[in-house]
Amino acid sequence: MLQQTPVARVLPTWRAWMNRWPTPADLAASPTSEVIRAWDRLGYPRRAIRLHRAAQVIVADHGGFVPSDLDALLSLPGVGEYTAGAVRAFAFDIPALTLDTNVRRVLARYLQGQALPTGQVTRAERELTWSIMPADGATKWMAGLMELGALVCTAKKPDCNHCPLVTNCAWVAAGSPPPVQPPRRQPQYVGSDRQARGHILAMLRNDVEALDLNTVRAGSDYVWADEAQAERALSGLASDGLINLRNDGKYCLPN
DNA sequence: AATACGGGGAC
DNA sequence: GTCCCAGTATT
Image 1 (cartoon, rainbow, N blue to C red):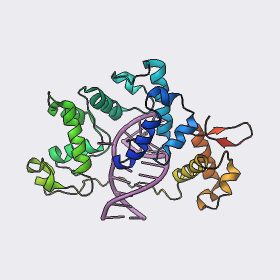
Image 2: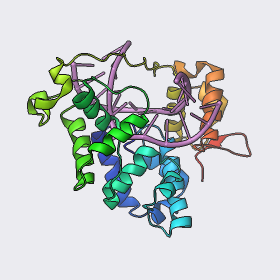
Image 3: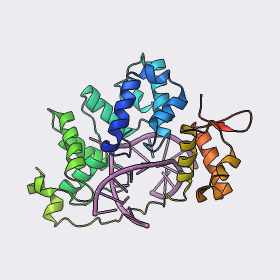
Image 4: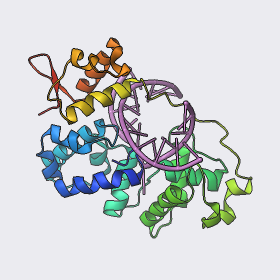
């Protein structure tokens, strides 16, 4: 849930989710439709599908317990380098890298004097982080860096006056320069395929039992005036496993 | 290495 | 409007 989604926004959904499905086996046994509905508007609903499938793999291959083995974690749907490291560090107290956007930003500023990290995690970043990770309390150290980035050393308005690292921060010493390389412009959401997918899923989560291309295009919203876009959204959702094509030609939430 | 993938809140 | 968010999988 936390992948590309702020903690404050995840928390209420996460609490309800864990109350309803306390264990991987509970989630694995739930119909996909209920999983998608419970995900609600958290965003990136394919994460819900992957989490559901990961729970089923955990039940089938790991006795219903989340594995601590790195390769086992990485083989789970939706679990990549960051999530695998976070589970190992925070659930199992195993020294591991959790190079999320927060940790990367803190280290980019404190060590490199750069306002923001660029591109993907590099080998140099991994090796540097390993080299400065303390032997004792490694996982608390990673959690501390993450928390510092999330609450103090934020992307937009860092609260350097309350930062425990301010006296040795290379970025502050350099006068807090702006990003060298401005981030790539993110595409407009309004009118996008993403919005079309979101609206289709919202209909199916709520009152619409099943729908087809005509149903989508009959909507009053301009997003669906584009037939090709509506088709892309439907086929994309289907290939992601978020909707199923029924025998009557209409789409519905999977089982 | 680029791109697709949500949606809400802050400014 | 634009940017950002405890990233991942695919091309």
